[in-house]
Length: 493
Image 1 (cartoon, one colour):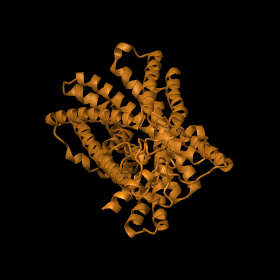
Image 2 (cartoon, helix red, strand yellow; image 1 turned 45 degrees about the vertical axis):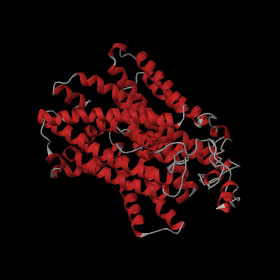
Image 3 (cartoon, helix red, strand yellow; image 1 turned 180 degrees about the vertical axis):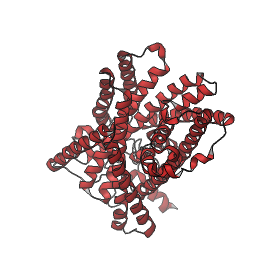
Image 4 (cartoon, helix red, strand yellow; image 1 turned 90 degrees about the horizontal axis):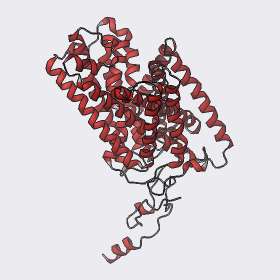
């Protein structure tokens, strides 16, 4: 026992174990399961997606809309299992960007990193723009002019920066509470509706006439699930990340799939009962509330949806700044961008670069009077294509990574191969269909900005003199039995 006490009090140094993480500065091992869950849930934005995606899916897939959502949920679960190949073995702040580098290598990681940054960037601008719109709509006393919209967005931008700088625990808990309240309100409306309108289970199965439009419906439904993987960007900050993050990813996708199917079934059933075309509605839940004599809920829903979009923007930017932070630590971006707050561990260098740009775009769109529907549709198309490309790359990386570490088995490789084929088909279909319609602006934005981002990152990578591949977290001295415990594992730069 004396030897054991001595070993704990004065442990012998372990060869190869460092005193600090390669991603020093973040609040290492500081957030628990529910904080990580809050990041994943807010990144997916279930409340906002549940109120918008079923309508768009019905517009393109008609009677195949509910089945489209079911299939999209299954594809997203397959993507989650491929991401978990890495998340169970590697803790990283770079999320899919780092995982792609570990599988397909540095060049592919540049493409994946660019796609992720664009996906999160486009969706953040979309969500802030939408949050400002719904906020003004919920509070008509403010007026509905351009100036009012700009003031609302600037105010949201200030709150946005304050939450992000407050650290991951603040942002994760705020966003989780917001999503729980909003989803609860939506489910209450769903329950009230189903108490008055019979559930039309026939809506689950499409008619033969609906089958040709089913692939496009799946493509649109996939956009409802993007962002769930943002929890993987908390690999450094999460407690027990190798167990927590995989569990969170699967739970978030499964729960969101159930929510989206229930909401879609309710909307289809209610609108069929009311004799109204769901695809023609701009606010289906609001229309249902009015139809069942609950008009007061409309304002409450608008306000809650505005807050939900805001929470989603915070979650997306949380992922952006950690990817940028990782790129700075790899030598791909300037060292100053990798600085963190001594008090909260927030990556303040990345926040200082990203937040002003992300807030400026929706403010500019609102100031020039950009068409709300066109702007939001363009941003949604561009972000959806970016995410699907990143998902395809990480799924392609998983089998190579397993072979490289000597843990390859048949089922994970087959599952990843199927996911790559499906996602490749989804991306091609998405670009082909959107490019030949009014969504062509979104496809052009995706292609143009992606090429520019890849070119920029490639040039910077070639000129860098301090490049390191796939920086991720590893056990440090304070993680070992008898190691020195500190507030942030001794990780101040």
